[in-house]
Length: 323
Image: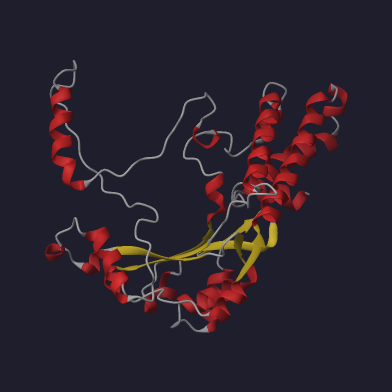
């Protein structure tokens, strides 16, 4: 339940799918209830149609299953009045290994871009990787060899009709929160005397969650997949990411025992917990030492790196260069 609780103890549960054929009944009932509340007599509402993560899983090699997945998503639309050239869709390919955690290799990003942008010559791929506006590398726990990426190829992806690329892993689901909970990004002021006690308790809870994700001797740890997504015109929905050659998988993905992965995060977070605990109990003179202040500035960055992709602000870059 920790994942759904914010800093004030309030729960924030995820949304649920509502059957489209019952929307009319829902609308009438809502309007009826509005009339019973002061100030809501003339209220109205609108519907927002949103996608559901993982709702269209299918075998990309099976044309029939591809069509069925597409129809399951678009059955609400009148396709006769839709202009495919005005629509873009995200197509994803998920790679799993039972009982394992998968991570993208940073050295494989060039190979992935070659796969997704087959019309782009090598120098254009190199230009994307060198561009700070078109390419962002998302390291995993500050490990230089591991991490996904986001890319906006722009004109370099025009010939292949690719607008956006995202390579990431699903292990982040264990700490993903839309609200302000214990997995929020930490700032240096969280180590101030008034808030460091709360931070210490949060780190202890986060470390315990990582340990639970690692499982027990009898039960395996939480698995994690590698996902590759691209944004293309609707007209190409049945023509992209149909397969990923084994040779590319071997060159771009590494697999870890799930317990090893989660216990790596557990021990790092536990170590950070003890550092913060020592700072909390240190006397004022020790806390004011330059080395202590520098450590206090670096600790939030190390905490965040175990939960989020690296921060991209100027302050973080200056901090890393100084350290």
